[in-house]
Image (cartoon, rainbow, N blue to C red; front, side):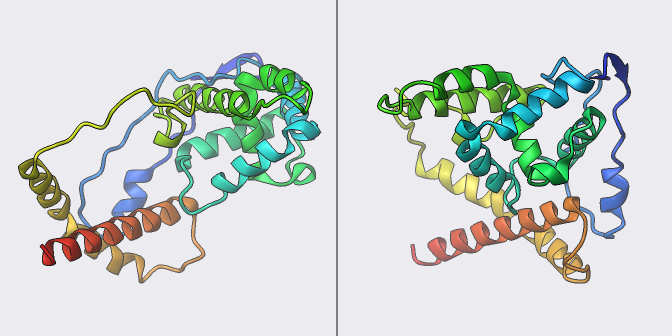
Length: 234
């Protein structure tokens, strides 16, 4: 269930399995159905609209929102199709004039920053002489973790840390473990090659789900070719 405009409403059901099945290719997939889910934004209607527009119009947040917008409007976007669709629905229900605020991905970027909006504005109001970049990055990462976590999504690795230092050392694995990992990874190669053939028959200008599958296949095949090349020279 989703808290919208002061009431609970059911989530849309996205028939991903049926759409993917139309490709005629059998391949392993993991699907997560999010039930009983609430977003981090426990506000609706006018209040949600005001907060999103505040994030969008504050000059001090312009660079932050723009950078996140670019990451969202990219073939390697970390936001799953069904989550993006749900966020778009909330933005529309709140009454945000998307076209007047730079488009969908800019509005979604603002939405994702809402958990730490007040803190970000407070930090940004500090003297320009103070180095607040690390604090802003920390708050941005925390906002993303809260926003994505509300949808049951793990934050991408590049947002997993709250500071520039990890405080950890790398853990080495044996050559046998590496070899087993590579072999298991390459076991899926025929499946992804089959998917590539199917995608080649589809128009390039298609919906977001197919776009994300196309990106996944491309990234897998790139890594697989790299691993095979390394193995051939060993």
